[in-house]
Length: 250
Image (cartoon, rainbow, N blue to C red; front, side, top):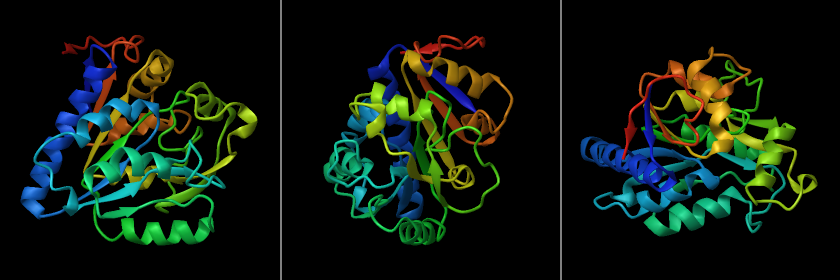
């Protein structure tokens, strides 16, 4: 696991986008196509803005998979991750092949359909975040490290739901759905490369536990320590509690 600490959120997004773009160009040159997993949330704003502006990526040859979505939320809702990905990634790049998780439909049909598609070939690179409770996708603690299903219906804990309010996606806790479709831990870890983009002081405790603590379901993102090709991108705020001596890249 590689860790990079940048000066601020903008620098963090740009650095992660540079590595993501380079990985995509290499994969496209070698294979002729690329398969990615895309995360959402406020932590991904600067990253996606920089990535969608990067030159030399044949986005029409990129296939995108959705990381998670709320159950029961229509795609028109401001907090919908379908809406987020359409506006911030798909429409900006012209990606032709994408698999969105429709949370307001039959969840079992969605899980089976997208699960079959993602299982058909390896994922080249996954873009993920880490939640304030150290969740990975919407796998809140204690996460299931053993389930082989590509996607699961999960119940969201209160810290996870409160994070969504704090970030401005919902006006109150009562408005946040209690369940979500989430990519499983096992499926995420099958990705050939993982880039975790994690900024802000509210993530500092989760980052410390995930990077310096034991690998345990009670800290879902700690599983990233076991992946052979993961890079964690932090800013000074999210890295503030780390004990390791890390170089600040600018």
